[in-house]
Amino acid sequence: MSYLNNRQSPLQHSKFLVQYSILNSPFPPVTLSVQTISMRHFFVLAILFAFASCSTNKVDTIVHHAVIYTVDSSFTVAEAMAVKDGKIVAVGKNEDIQKNYTATENIDAKGAAVYPGFIDAHSHFYEYGLGLQEVNLDATKSWDEIVDSVLSGSKRNPDGWVIGRGWDQNKWTIKQFPNKDKLDKLFPVRPVLLSRVDGHAAIANQAALNLAGIKPGQTITGGQIETVKGKLTGILVDNAVGIVTRKIPAPTEQEIEDAFLFAQRNCFADGLTTVSDCGLPYTMVNTIAQLQHKGSLKMRMYVLLSDRPENYEYLFKRGVFKTPGLDVRGFKVYADGALGSRGACLLQPYDDQKNWKGFLLSDPKHFQEVAEKIAAKGFQMCTHCIGDSANRVILKIYASVLKGKNDHRWRIEHAQVIAPEDFHYFGDYNVIPSVQPTHATSDMRWAGARLGAKRLKSAYAYNQLLQQNGWLPLGTDFPVENISPIYTFYAAVVRQDLKGYPAGGFQTENAIGRADAIRGMTIWAAKSQFEEKEKGSIEPGKYADFVILDNDIMKVKGSELPNIKVLKTYLNGEKVYEKK
Ligand SMILES: [Zn+2]
Image (cartoon, rainbow, N blue to C red; front, side, top):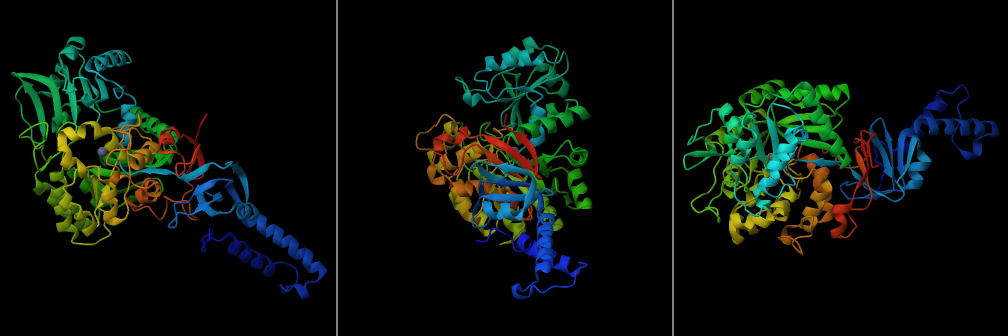
């Protein structure tokens, strides 16, 4: 293929300018024929050519001697590129780019691999940033360890709420939900709320439960308040968590800005240049736009508003919100909870809890109404579906609204457990499965206990889902998983966790190829948010969002993938991260 895009070919461009210069020169017109050019004309022309070529092809940055995975439609690998005003102007061979362009900054990549900036198609960027200001329980391996971390973390502030997140009882020796007794002893007055890693369950102490007015035996639609022998245990599942979180004072303006900036710093260091934020209130749209306008927030964001009447009202009235850094045109709806907390809605009972199938978070009528409303206004619907029952309910609703092949790009988030007979819906109605490969490798140790061997076979079935439409956006769901796109790539391709477990990989018939995994983190993620014409590949005309890695993810051995580091991250042609 030709590396130089026709519309913006620098050669054509400079030719045009040379002719123009000649026509407007004070010298007599000349004919561009070797035989008729006089010596005087030859010098004039030489000067004009030199002048034209250096004035027309001056760019900001040239990256050369790189292995550039352009992720264009032919998955072309180039050697060099030129960047001007935040956009890529040319991609090609070292000698062509260096001959046709001069740059203020020249980056000799010394053979390093360059990829389009990574895009996370499903994350909770703001929540992750808030979490960076809370007690991080990700690494804890027992309830006692959690209590210790909370106690030391609580000393950062003298009073107010103690908020933690990231615990996962599946990592403990005793894999049962804890109870609040120890928290009550240590924090008789301060309210404490510790969220499970997936955010679908939490434990609160009595002070927090009192503030929320929760009583033993209380019930709630779409959630659970655990009561054992007439006493609250502090465990709250799905909608019950919200009763307590609504009592937490709203973060200050400074805390909100810090959340975005802390999250941005870490994401740039991992090579992300666009993140989705799945499920924000409409009021955050202005906050984000202001921080981007001010220049402190540079990360590009694709925002899905949560399933609330005021959010529909806002976006339907306003229309699509689109700037180079912010795109709001979709809604995030929750069909069910998570598999870990047994909130996922299954067609048949859980294997490790008889007579329990999980539950939908709303009546199917609600999902149908919402789908029709969003379709009528031409927006995007993205629904969180984990269990095979939740997936079926939503797929059928989508089918009834989308009516066959279409380009509405409606998505199912996670698409985690799919009944074998339901896969075809994705292809028949062009429904996009938006999946997170690290969920497979985080859940694989216990997902079989929940689902049994047979159901497990059609869970985390990314290759099967990819076959439905021929493309598949990838993400992480951070802070549920690590933010790293390199871990996503590793989990998608090798299907092992960071300890190399299991040998040979987990259900590798559903691994996806390396080129497809890169597409999933770049161009396909962009496409899942209607942005494939502006980002997701290194091609002329697109944003100069790219990363330089210390090793080539297309070539290193599978076991070495998790060690790959980002050397530099560029966004809009500007270096936003450099490894120290
Ligand atoms: Zn999520």
